[in-house]
Length: 216
Image (cartoon, rainbow, N blue to C red; front, side, top):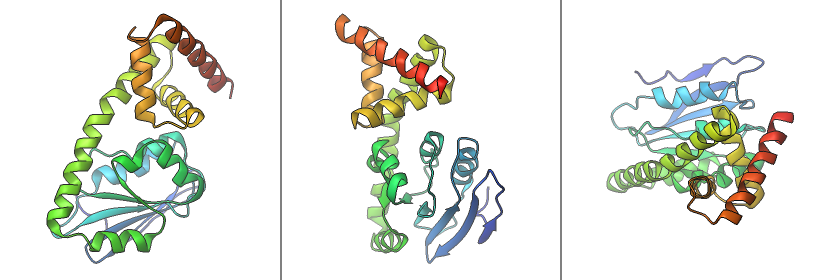
């Protein structure tokens, strides 16, 4: 894999346009246009295949011009590329979606590109390495329970992967809770750890949400 060249990668009617630039040792991926379920994979692939050159400090994904961020788009911001320190820039409903999904626990989220760049350039190398390690530890700690919950929902409620994650995100938004906490609760209640009364109530809620998602 190589570092993408500076400039635009043209989008289409259904795909956002990706624009690469850099500010010193900070590399910037600007996303222009809405991130739908179909186009989220393009953004995720761009993050996974980014190979930072020597001296690169971080990658900033600028979502400040994105008005709509699908659930799959939120998931696309979770990257297993441990070679970079990832920072996100977002405002409005996109920012709220990222915060509700718990992205701020594993990834630095800023409300402006200038703030992101200034913050990164103020970090010395040792601090940056500690930040990268912490992000990776948080990703490892939180991802298994989300994947486990998705797997249980797929098996028990005959959902596909996208529907299972949509359901977790809907519960997260409805309860103002982090997706990770919702996933842990779902796992507890579907494995019999919770009381029978609580488990039955949860199952009823999950079935209603499943039906609502499929009707929508």
